[in-house]
Amino acid sequence: MNAECDASVVVLGPGAIGTTIAAALHEAGRRPLLCGRTPRDSLTLRDGERLVVVPGPVWTDPARIGRKARVVFLAVKATQTAAAAGWLAALSGPETVVCVLQNGVEQMENVSPHCPHGQIVPAVVWFPAQAQSDGSVRLRGDVRISLPVTLAAGVVAQALQGTRCAVELAPDFNSLAWRKLLQNAVAGLMALTQRRAGMFRRADISGLALDYLRECLAVARAEGAELGDEVPQAILDAFQAAAADMGTSILTDREAGRPLEWDARNGVILRRGRAHGIRTPIGDVLVPLLAAASDGPG
Image (cartoon, rainbow, N blue to C red; front, side, top):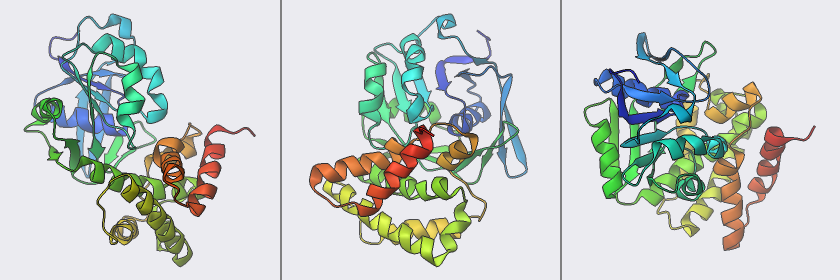
């Protein structure tokens, strides 16, 4: 391994989220080990007119990893977690903290079977980062993540201390995770229409989005999230105020013909709603359409 690389800190999955975290660490003089499926010489983050280039390489063979990491930032999509099991086995020991930078509220359940040795910390990612056609990543805002209040989360916060990535240790992590899930869920409409944030300025789409968000809010509250009646409108307002060409990761995957995170972002709300006996009429339509758009057949 390159002597300049801090192999104790690993970014696994150098996509939009992983590149942003890697750039934050690199800027602070803590160059992480980069691991993924595709060999690359470097990663590039575009922040306005500024470029941050993170030196590679991106390692592609977990068999070549010779030591356990202290912190692993798991930034692969929820649909790719099983495929990352070999990496997690190679990188994780009993003292390893695996910070899961994925969408959804089932991070612990989804990652634990593939990482039996590491200490898993779920995270809520709040920054807008988009993969570009040239392989770079465009950052459109400040970088922030929320973590539960645990000893393992403190290790993650320490790894990011002094970087551009702000870390919030949240006593009510469950409520934050569900609020972000509502935001991700309504973005599923973008994947189905293959339109960007400007679509939410249409009266018909904004009405549909608000009804769906209220439906999701009822499920979130049944799951213990303390979210007020104002949350659906606040989420819709944010989409309407965003740049008209702002996308989302599920839209990027739809455009590229990749599997969609439909279950982690939308299916989970349908499943949890049924478990609580809550009607989800919009979700009943939206989820099968997203599933079919992702998985086919046809």
